[in-house]
Image (cartoon, rainbow, N blue to C red; front, top):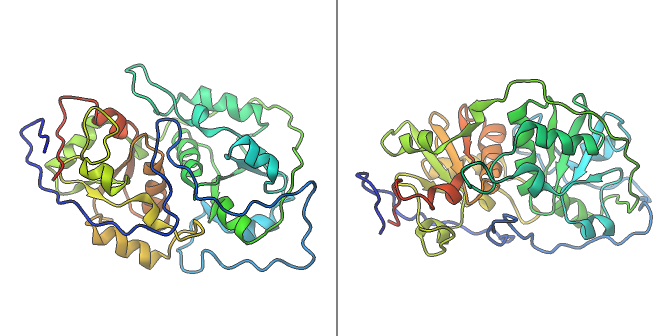
Length: 334
């Protein structure tokens, strides 16, 4: 056990149920490698011969205006006010994507090393706005993100847009995994893009982002709790990805992928509530989410804030990359 301060480690290692689509743990470059799913090869738009049958992926999930299902996406493929952004690798996009989708590499856009040398931090608004401008996105657009990793990077993108005040960003439930597995309409066409002059105009929403000082308060404050979205091995200190392994005292471990099924679709509200409340993460507490570089953490933030309706959920953007590399913060492996 490592203890770096007066705080006494009290949290026991929590058992975590690993879902069938366990995605490989994060690296500094990308938080996960998606489980392979069938890729629809195409040289042109694949036209359905009859109305596609799409399971109601959100059947038991409480409505959130930031989560749409495949049916909604199919109905809005020709909506000129809806911009679909594919966050997968270039070769995956080239093999087939949602018709009309434009591609963006998420890591350099939504993460950047800060002035203190902490990797993976949220870049300045202007940095993200430049990338959005290159895609021709306007502030009035509905921007729908998807990826090949159960909305991991998509949630990071949506969270960043929320921080800086874009009015309408969404995720597709199940993301590409669900779309591909259900053989929905795809294309290999690359849309023509006319650059815009995107600019964020609102003040940053600091209510959904936290620094280490605020997170430290959770150790001695029972009204606050850290939801650690990393794997059980990282949480226990067996998988060390910083100068020290382990976790923040009094934090709870809920591996991010427990929130989705084998196709990356979010579990029902009742199932999600049972998982998180069962680990002590209650809606009446201030919840800080973290992982290694705050990608898995944004996925858990989305679940808690958007699907469960928790009042105060903040992403600790420095996450374990910052906490585990400092010598003045408490760490435990108990």
